[in-house]
Image (cartoon, rainbow, N blue to C red; front, side, top):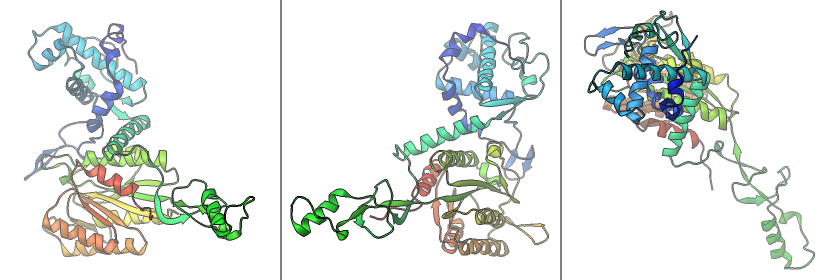
Length: 429
């Protein structure tokens, strides 16, 4: 697609803008995939899915909000946007041109791609024609949609990971720690007497100390086989993880978006595993009325919908994926905010009941949790609500699958998951 180049702004305000900072401020918007299936009305919850969050116009509006929040607009622009200005067409055109240039830079830097064919008056992707008002190209921009690239997703994952680890007070990341010790090159623990077959990674001070304690200080020092001490290091294991994301309707209800933070944590985990634990694997499974694996490339566009919560099928899909992974450790990270309210019957029909805890649904869910336990797969549940009946359900799942349970919020979800993942196996002194 062609872009109109505005050299007037290239050397002015545009150069002073921090594109990476704007991308980080846009992360909540970019990871908000909207509501599946378009407009949907619920008698208790009202309308959902009435906004198109993937249109170019929606991106422009998000950019404007980010620019105003970051204080990167001139005072004249701020006044004009707030309706306090004199209605100056030149300032309005300057704002429109700035947005066009920012989007062009996002495309040039490889963060997003654009799909669609706007009308000839579209100011964002074609010739800049119009009366000079901010809203001139809105109709055309609404026909153009943007997509995050792999680089854009990786950038958001990196920033999310950095922020999460910073909040945990961590400056560096290592590999998974287990309770087993092995001899190796890097020393992370105390030394031990040498046994046949160990890597001869000698702890020289301890070895000499043993020899001197036995025969006294003399030259040359007479070393005996029993004097040899070798360094111990933690045995480094590989881990296969499946993140289960609840996509039921309640994940965006009650005035709180619980789904976008969950996606952000999944992206951060993906970046962590790819850069620090290359031997590990991460898969993502969404569960609403049905459960399915989605590729990481589709994670940003994943949506909630008018769905129930088929936890049993989510566990079944996750278990099947993990059984195919030849790793030392396997685990399920389940992020949800509600009770199981659906199961898949033998012939594929979905049985639903959102009124209370249905015994048939609970029985099927506990059966899948038991299957995970038999397969050696713990289920670590991160519950975004704390109703009494949910507490009982999560405790039972945890007891059956021998996992862990966390009752958290969108503010602490990422910290809890990172701590759990990085301390999956603790070092034994």
